[in-house]
Length: 222
Ligand code: G16
Ligand code: MG
Image 1 (cartoon, rainbow, N blue to C red):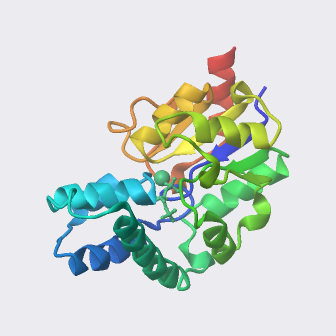
Image 2 (image 1 turned 120 degrees about the horizontal axis):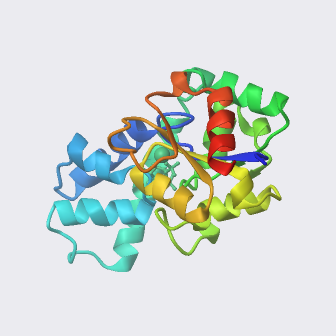
């Protein structure tokens, strides 16, 4: 029986990628690395330190910094990013998602957040959505990033449901793989060709339908 939903944040509830990109671009420029939108695509859904490693490899500078220097670079980027988040308002909620969250609450489903971002609580607060969620996974407590199932398993656990009773929502391939490996029903939001491993796909957030998810979940578990 379907009891709850475990949400990714960036790309599902809001689009923070533009702010991450702006902050990383400035940080990379200070060490002589130029990044473009293709590099930015590779940063979606991965952690802050993994993102820095991708950027350093892109600039062929992966061996030029000590762990302490890398920490300092990541902190600089985060300070800049947090500054940009101050501009976020409820207008930055992706189309249809507030109504979808309302429908889930009205139907009494449990809601958990499974974001790799340490800034997720700040972002939900800026969007005015914090009260919709029963629990948020703290990414600092995780040993492995997506596509490892850990974050989605924890999300379900925090709201007291089994993975088999949960739907996970994601916009990234690694996220869909994490949901599938967790044993949850996977909903992809984005290009169905890219997210073909998902149990059900919607091309954009405005297409997301609770009835369609409930029907597909029932059919799969019948
Ligand atoms: C998000 C973004 C990633 C970012 C990560 C960590 O993941 O998609 O680009 O690197 O959070 O963010 P922070 O530096 O704020 O801890 P998700 O899981 O919400 O898609
Ligand atoms: Mg995402």
